Figure (tube, rainbow, N blue to C red):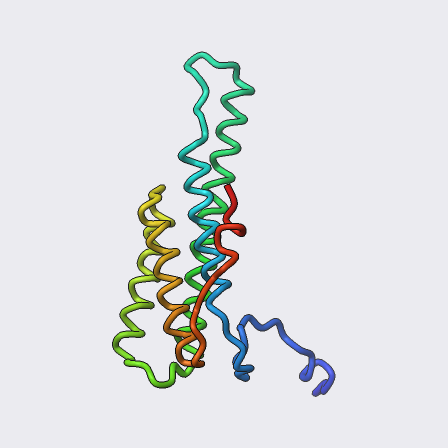
Length: 156
């Protein structure tokens, strides 16, 4: 027997906005990229225990390092997700489609490289690529892009 209540029951959906809502901001991708950058910095500054250090000290190091790796990789993937949404769903008026595609292709590849490596060079390039995309995005709205809170958000 057909149950209309079961038929109309909402199912879980995963999308930014396939309506589309028209609300986009590359800042989310940049914050994810900055998180990648910060995790690389923390991994590079984490001091490994000396040979023969107590097991607890070695375990603490391993736990901290693995958490940094996990967060780095999760945020690199989040950056990729946000960039894919922005690229695919936003109309990009008054831009060169090939130029926009090249910017996104480069940024997506950098995010992938950030997942594969512990490289400050790659992390910094990913943040810069997000800034480049943001500059192009805001120009389509006749707004000059700036991120005055970048340094405060990233912190020491």
